[in-house]
Image (cartoon, rainbow, N blue to C red; front, side, top):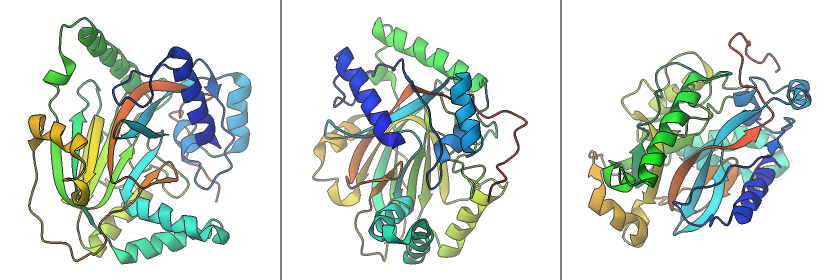
Amino acid sequence: MFSEVLHGLIGRTQRSAGVDQNHPRAVLVPSSLRIGIIPAGSTDCVCYSTVGTSDAETSALHIVVGDSLAMDVSSVHHNSTLLRYSVSLLGYGFYGDIIKDSEKKRWLGLARYDFSGLKTFLSHHCYEGTVSFLPAQHTVGSPRDRKPCRAGCFVCRQSRQQLEEEQKKALYGLEAAEDVEEWQVVCGKFLAINATNMSCACRRSPRGLSPAAHLGDGSSDLILIRKCSRFNFLRFLIRHTNQQDQFDFTFVEVYRVKKFQFTSKHVEDEDSDLKEGGKKRFGHICSSHPSCCCAVSNSSWNCDGEVLHSPAIEVRVHCQLVRLFARGIEENLKPDSHS
């Protein structure tokens, strides 16, 4: 329901402002309306990451008091067509396979996520492709600085100011933004490709997929999990439930980005729109890997719990595009004690 309201609100705002949402480089207009969320979902990660708890009464009180919190939104495009907006998780591979399989087992209720998760883990599929990304130079934080986003976040304020200065320079022609941007490319075989606009914390993972991700800094944390053994991947997953650094593995890479593109190996030759631009300006940082024994060619994208089947996408982060009735997580707030 939150996703439907989000898409309706953003879409209506852009139509009123005459903005073409299908253009990947369109500058989207923030909405003046706020969204209030009463958590009643399976993970409630948006509430957990913005309020610090999935308690319905706490969220209702934030709405009554009238708190306001700005939040980044990512637009997902394919061939100059808007597919969806994302505020929490974009996941290809492991999380994409889970959501695709779980949709076929809705009769199991919430247990379908556990069943599909175990099935996906045992399947251990990996997928070959190319990830091209633009590092977020404007942000004052990093994915591994152990500084989580909190109420009145300094990183979000400073990052927004620096991003606005960059946009003004580009507007007045002081810097040709697309010319000075230095894209990077990572190619290989991946068990999972995750992009998070927030920590994506929930009861099962109190620190989330990216503990230091910020809600309104105009960037997304891009997490690449390369092909590895089941045992090592299990070690990585277990660290989402404790205080250890989940990025401290040789097969895990994390970047803070403003934009990124993904093209599956099996469609790179067909999808020239994304590839031709990459040939001219991208510098490769690829490494060789042994051939994959998996026969599966493409995965699906988990976009905030919805399935996207496109094997080639272009994603851009829009800084503080929507506002919620929330305050941010307080420093002294204890983890959610609900079972």
